[in-house]
Length: 124
Image (spheres, one colour):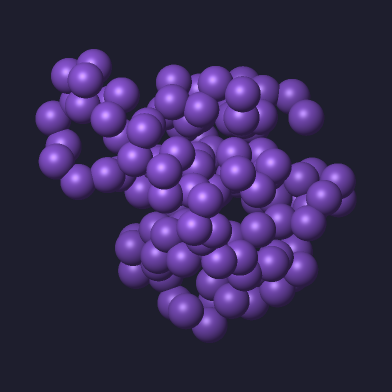
């Protein structure tokens, strides 16, 4: 959402490419993260509408998978005491058979090994 971000052009290109292959999904966690830099709600909604993005609920089935990933994170020395948004996003994608588009795919690959991830060094 930030045109001054070094990731802006890559992100827009990837959104376009991915939207041509399958419907895009955004859940409440992702939507919130997109608003954190101070993005305008109307501008965010307009951008999501350009790509016909589906607003998807977090399925209940992702709770157990997110908890398991968070336990693995803590067991591996992770210092945070509250599950990170990436665990909810990864679990949602995993239980819904979706892919994840992120500039940082490492947490998804670490805790959701079978999840298909698209990152800056990835080809679709």
